[in-house]
Amino acid sequence: MILPSHHSAVRFIAVCLLVLTLTGCVAGQSLKYNDLPALGTPQVQSKGNMNLEVLDQRPYVLDGTKKNTYIGHYRAGFGNPWDVKTSSGNPFAEEMRQSLIRELLQVGFSSKNNPADSTLRVVILEWNMDTYINATLWYDLNVLILDPAGSIIHQQKIAKKQSIEGSFWTGAKSAVEKKAPEIFQQVIHQIVTDNKEHFAISR
Image 1 (cartoon, rainbow, N blue to C red):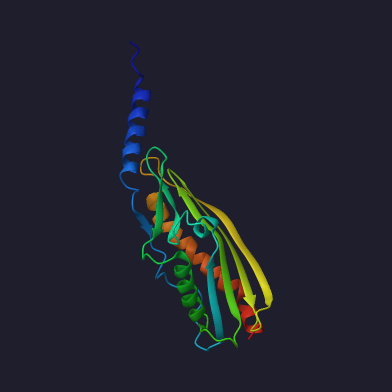
Image 2 (cartoon, rainbow, N blue to C red; image 1 turned 90 degrees about the vertical axis):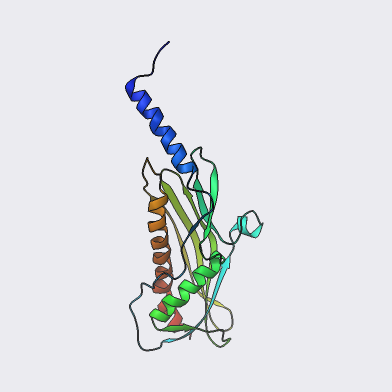
């Protein structure tokens, strides 16, 4: 009988430990995207009102494959995926809408449903993540500024794929819990910062 080498045995044990670790900690997971602080520079003077719409157009949400609380998945030890949802239980689009309201307030805009005001509309075409030993988070958003008549006066695409480095021993779960909300905050900040001049133009 051929016995495994010392290095092979160590590698085998390490893989088994990784499988057990990941299998035991990924079921029923959530990430906190709500109640994150705004990143914009505080403004005292009001700059006007904005109507705000956030639409979840992810194809797997529209066809019912995934719930509207879905934000990605963790993979267990053998690679099988487990869905990750918003910790609040609110739809992801609502999490984004509430975060945008906080960011708008921070920079001097209020969000009210008034037909006389312009509209910031964010269409979520994609927001997803795949987490195992390392993680990838990717998003694709269409940002529209509409005048009171509903005509598009500005449009921006915000899309990116970001890697989150994990650990061989514990996977990327801990890193994702820290970095994913930070990425979300940065995207919210970018939406408002990149478009706030167009808010003023359309008032």
